[in-house]
Image (cartoon, rainbow, N blue to C red; front, side):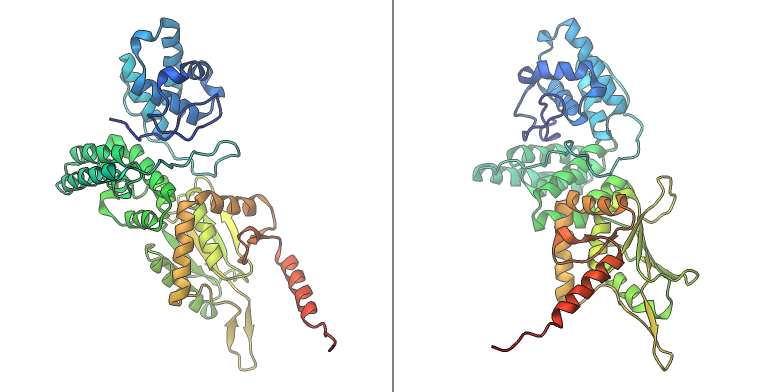
Length: 415
């Protein structure tokens, strides 16, 4: 059963509608879908996937003539070969309706770059279930979890999916269905989808489950997948201290903060061959949202962002090269102008709230990083207003600070 597998339905090519699989069957959208299937390369992939799902779940084959069948087959083959892992899986299942059996497509790298304007994924936002449905869903989910614990993943997934049908907003159903599917080799795409749906729910309890997934052994098979890291925010980080002794407090604070954010303890090393007067963050594409979070929390006026090469073989998702301006006093004591993030309890609590927001709304964070990377000379800077965190060069920032300082020195006459 594929209910709630896809939260898309097809509209005229290039558009999406907020609906579940059940909202629009094949008969209601056949004409539009046939147009898309005739020229699949010109259509929006998400709309094609919605059409494929509608055909696979609700089409009556006795109403499909030979000409339409040819168009459908053409579109499904194209989606199977060229779509994302999830789209390919949907196309493959739908081709079975035409008695065309294909093997699961070989895994390909997941594109985790920010969505292009006009091509955003529709967020998962099903309506609230009735009380009786929620109660029925809870029972089914508990039965499924019991089967999961016995490693009966297929049976567990089937029970939990029935519960999700009754209550599509059940966070327990989404998480535990993803757990079961992560242990079924042909269901990894669906597991990632249900984790994304959980992120879309966006409550603190939903994001807590995503954070739990980082270390949950049920997800061992997906642990190194870029898309799993993107949706859960799991990162392997290295911290490089470029300024020696004065940089040690900052490195220690970054380590503490990442651990308190439920990340794996980062690796650290020293490198004083090229001291930096500001931090740099080198990162892989799937880490963009977490880059925005960390750049925001470093508490440094200039944070430089450097994407890693597409073919990077680094085992790290993110490398923080810590740097700061170092001054030497009369006694020869060296001091850095920044000790990195604050790790007091109240500051960590605020950081966790920011992390939850980034997990629930990663697109905003990704767009901030893209603006920095796409504009030479820009840096990511902490500011009170989220919209002002992307700034120009430090020289401009210094100029603004000088103006503020000048204003504070204006003497106000007594009245």
